[in-house]
Amino acid sequence: MLSPLEKAGILTEALPYIQSFYGKIVVVKYGGNAMIDPELEESVLKDVILMKLIGMKLVLVHGGGPMIDSWLGRLDIKADFVNGLRVTGPEAMEVVEMVLAGKVNKGIVSRMQNLGGKAVGLCGKDGGMIKGRRITQPQDLGLVGEITVIDPSLILTLIDQDFIPVVSSVGMGEKGESLNINADTVASALGGALKAHKLVLLTDVEGIFLGEGQERKLASQLAAKEIPGLIEKGVLTGGMIPKAQGCLEAVEKGVENVHIIDGRKPHALLLEVFTNEGIGTWVK
Ligand SMILES: Nc1ncnc2c1ncn2[C@@H]1O[C@H](COP(=O)(O)OP(=O)(O)O)[C@@H](O)[C@H]1O
Ligand SMILES: [Mg+2]
Image 1 (cartoon, rainbow, N blue to C red):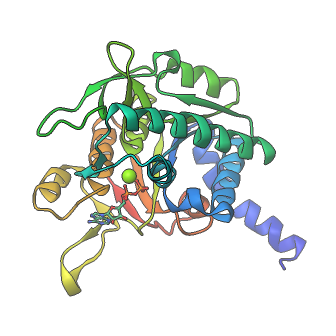
Image 2 (image 1 turned 90 degrees about the vertical axis):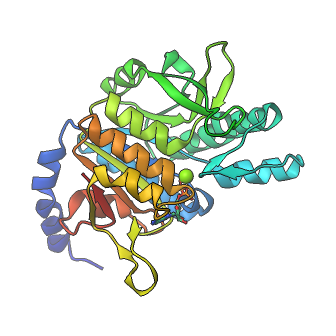
């Protein structure tokens, strides 16, 4: 146990970090493991609430792949992945929306409320936040969408009123149809549209790995402009493709602090924000 004096010391050490983040918008995306492990999730939600209460404007975007898989399985609906995106037919889309915007989103909201946070759950349809169109090239992915319009005004209203928006990545097509948009894509686009100070993508690896075999190692920094080449060469695959593309877009929109970090580590967010250690990959 720490002595009261040691605790005071730690808090004072955090002061410069708190000052530099005060009033700034921070977009956090989490999914995968951090959502299945209740203890880990609690640590993410507590970090978010803490960061909010010391003056940052937090926006939380969530995924829900494992829960969608589980429900698609229970309902016996098949799911394929192409370049990290889940091919989504109309039936699967119904499940995606029910699970993501319903069960998962509202579950996070209630857990955050129970921990003392003021959370509001939204999907991309609310307030016309995310409009999109189906991705049909190079392959038709059904109701998987790409973003055409992003309107962050509802989010701005909420964060100005001290709420923590919790966003699920269901968007709306031109005819009002629901679109399944990758959650990293949504987090990055929101980060750009909100001119966020920082975008943190919590994932299930330490960050972006480059090189092959023995040479393969974590890139602590990565120039955003290298991303398209790395995708083409097959260095970035699966879910890392939309994640890295999102980072590139956020950087292009002027987000200066774009980080992919290991969400399997408890309090990874706090470590990222309150220390100089520089964990994970900083895309710039
Ligand atoms: N070069 C790479 N470096 C790190 N992870 C990579 C790389 N290429 C592909 N990946 C994969 O991307 C995954 C993360 O994306 P994803 O599975 O969509 O997780 P989430 O969106 O829940 O964070 C990693 O678990 C890893 O398997
Ligand atoms: Mg993913």
